[in-house]
Length: 202
Image 1 (cartoon, helix red, strand yellow):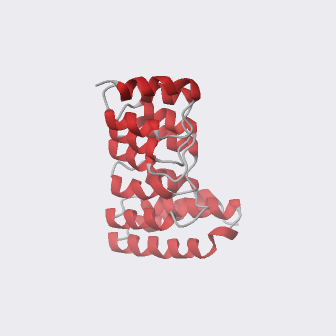
Image 2 (cartoon, rainbow, N blue to C red; image 1 turned 45 degrees about the horizontal axis):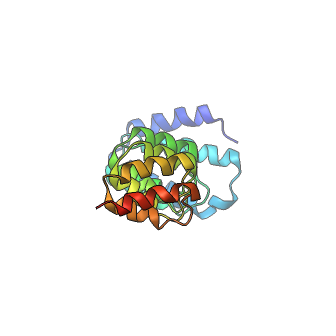
Image 3 (tube, rainbow, N blue to C red; image 1 turned 135 degrees about the vertical axis):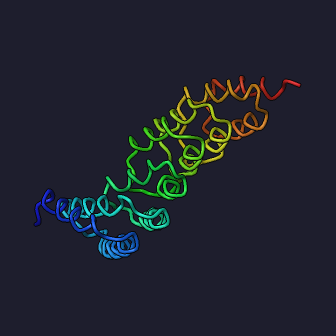
């Protein structure tokens, strides 16, 4: 097994003189190699792929990063550092595919991104097929109307009691959100009277 530090140093030396097109080609080749065996790699092998992906992603064309983000979403297991690096990218075209669809992105990382990034990143997170309560708590706490509506509409999103309370407060001035909350089967019984009062207001 190659030493990770030595591999990183060697890669950086090679990439120093590599053209943008050469970097893109190398990244595409490594991506294909990874996806062919993604489900069978050991943790050590994943770590090596992570090192390679991180090195190749530096100073790489935007188009190549967008392609990498889209392709890595097809793998249930992926190198964690490169997945997080893509998800944290300020360019939503790069971050979006991973934020929305990657099963390899850790919940803690999703919550951290949700606490820091802009509206486009929040919307991508709110579109995830499954969202845990800690993540929805963060997104609801940002009080972005479009994000809140998407969370409520997403049946795979788990919403905490506190999350529902905050949503109800926002629904006082957002009729559409109020109607969406009323349709949630998991709205706690003790909060049912509050949504009813909101909807009955003229």
